[in-house]
Image 1 (cartoon, rainbow, N blue to C red):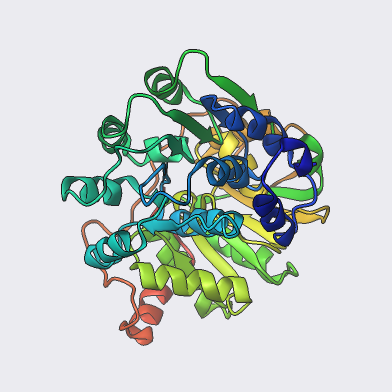
Image 2: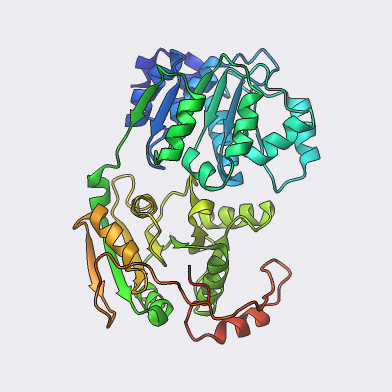
Amino acid sequence: MFNDFNLSEETLKAIREKGFEKPTPIQEKAIPLLLEGKDLVGQAQTGTGKTAAFGIPVVERVNPKEGTIQALILVPTRELAIQVAKEIKDLGKYRRVKVLAVYGGKPIFGQIDLLKRIRPQVVVGTPGRVKDLIERGILDLSKVKIFVLDEADRMLDMGFIEDIEFIFSQTPEEKQTLLFSATLPPEIRDVIRRFLKEDHAEVRIEPEKPTVEKIRQKIYRVGDRKLFETFLAKLEETPFRKGIVFTQTKREADWLADRLKEAGFNAEAIHGDYSQNRREWVLRNFRKGNIDLLVATDVAARGLDIKGLDAVFNYRLPQDAESYIHRIGRTGRAGKEGLALSFSSDAEDDRLQRVKKLAGDTFEFVNLSDRPLERGKKNSKPRRGFGNRKFPKRGFGRKRDNFNSFGSRFKGENPFGD
């Protein structure tokens, strides 16, 4: 129980108000080590309580009477910055810990004003915006005693390593460094060796197979030209109230959201090319149930706290099998059954084989392609049907009839490939 961690009564009261009854496995193992001041590597999937695992020690260890930045938490996306800041603000409200999120997509001068007025003890930010604030002489990290890298694997995927190295160099040599990640590829291991103390602790929570077994999974292998047609047919016959559709690219997310709207679904895309206001509007309406389908890339959806998902749809299988487990794990939570429908074109059999190897016999496989399934097949280069032709960008000011005519030209074939 949380009482066993010797936490302050203020923090325990905030934990109870959030409805946390007992620690999750990552919290149970990580919190005592972090309260001791140990550097730590934590590996666990989204939805396992990672934010509270480092958030509770953060609010316990900072001094709310000092108007200096004592904890810095770096995250890969704007949405995650907002989400993590809110969680820590909730956990620290009775200790009067001040928390501020800083991220791109919003005017920097407004965030500069808030930093000066609020004088937070905890800053949660994206690497680019944090670096910008440091270079402007606004963000003073000389008093930081806790440095957190959250979703570290995604930050490396997004090319933030140089920004992270610069930010790390601006913090004191003596501090507690925490790294949380869903996966620990060799690149992450290199970061661990450079940033964390040699005697750091490691806590690894492997994905629980029983959780995956609560999810009814089907993977459809189809001909490349029939991918959208098959996807739409299965979507129409599947009962759900709220679902996420995963795509490979931003352009594909836009294209697919428009096609789904034409088919009568209440769908919206979300990715990094949208303004922050647009992204917040989409997420707010999806959480309220005003949007049925959120069409997203892995990067846009990573770390988002979206409750009550009935189904996950993989319009294409991801490049790596671990991402498949991560995607489908968003449904079937809190003891409920979930549904995951995935689609794989016969030009992408290499991805299918990787998922089959990891997921074993937990899913039903349906082969709708005329081509034989080739083991170890190399991925052929997807067709791109438009050459260099340009298309208008999505946004609030676009005309629907332009996009209707755009979508209707292709008769179901996705032009964007991978």
